Amino acid sequence: MFKRILAVAVMFLVSAVLTSGGTGVSHAAEKKKTTKAKTVQSTETKKVFDAHDTGVRYHFNDTDMDFNFGTLVLGSTVNHGVEIGEAFYVASKIKDGDAASWQEQWFKMARLAEARGEKSLAGGHKVSARDQLQRASYYYRISLLSILPNDPRMKERALKSRNLLKKAGELFDPPLEYFEIPFEGTVLPGYFRKAAAGTKPAKTLIMIGGGETFAEDLFFYIAPQTYDRGYNFMTVDLPGQGLLPMYGKPFRPDMNVPMKAAVDYALSRADVDPRYLASYGYSGGGGFVPQAAMHDPRIKAIAMNSGVVDAYPLFSTMPVVLASKKEIASWTAFHGNIVKAICWRWGVSMDKPSGLAAANKGFTFDPTKITVPALLIVGEGEYKSEEVKRQQKVIMDGLPNQMKKMVITPTVEGATNHCVMENRSLVSQVLFDWLDDVLK
Image (cartoon, rainbow, N blue to C red; front, side):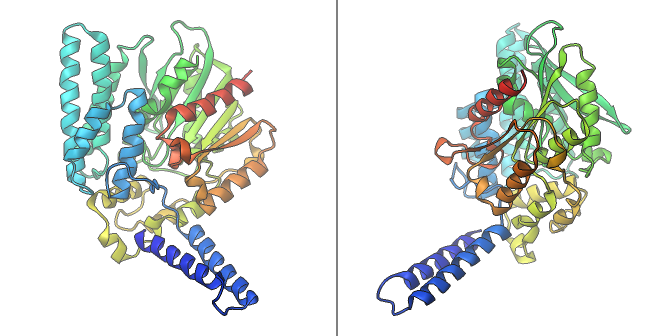
């Protein structure tokens, strides 16, 4: 990435010299050179897009580790996923770019929070127990980052995270419920929390993640903001997510099929009002959710962050897909393992990330066939990608419903990255203010 940035900077400087006064270059030549430089820059932007490049440094020099620390970790603070003091203490003990160090240090903090939570629970202090146990759950989940799927710790820690969130969930009022939806010989695990006690039907949001998510991530992403506004919250792992690839369920082009099972479950509940069922997807979920709405009229409104109308060209621009053997060999252990895990989720050989592009052929939807209100949210930094920008335009141009909207969240408000995980309050304001207006 440094070489790419340096190359663009050099082109910019050369262009500046050629277009400045006193160079002896004619106006026509200046125009030709400048146009050429802009074309090269534009081509470079279209060619490569790193969704995990934050544009700022939170703590680590390793860009993938820093992205996860700044967005997945620190972003969850507002929803009690982590404590700032605990997070930065752990970060201070991690060797930059080292996968084993990341895994070990978050695991240690998970065990400390778990012990505190269990002590409070034994003493009858339910609020303290709930707060500690839900953080312990998320620390175990964070420790999963860069653990490879053939490592037994992957399943052990994932189930530990799930069990602790289930235990913490029982201490909420109304409780956070864990459920499993039977699906093609296995189950789709998820969570549901009512907006209020009782069985009165309420508006409901189904939150769907992307290529690297567990259902637990989505709870800490937006659940409190959901029920604070009087909506039921629901999230679920689809094929490719959580532990489902271990059970022969990688990502698949027809994600509308498992989404139908999720909607079936939601509408089987007396506390879900079928007139007000919305779904919000981030990252890959920005393709799964609209595809589901294209096939299922029971979904009454959708939101995407950002929209993925065709995953193939988007993946084709990613550095991990375009990387040479030499570049792959230079990756840190953390980044290399993250890429391998993503390959596993798409059923691609873990040593051939170039196969991710082909694996995403067919992950599409037709915006002209989505008749419900639709919202696009995209961080300003992510919107700099020409391919991301192109796909948002295709979606907005194609959506037939006039209650469609696109919001670009600003860098100056710390809301610029992929999925805008670093400013969940702003995302929630945009999302729910819009949903309140369209679900009337």
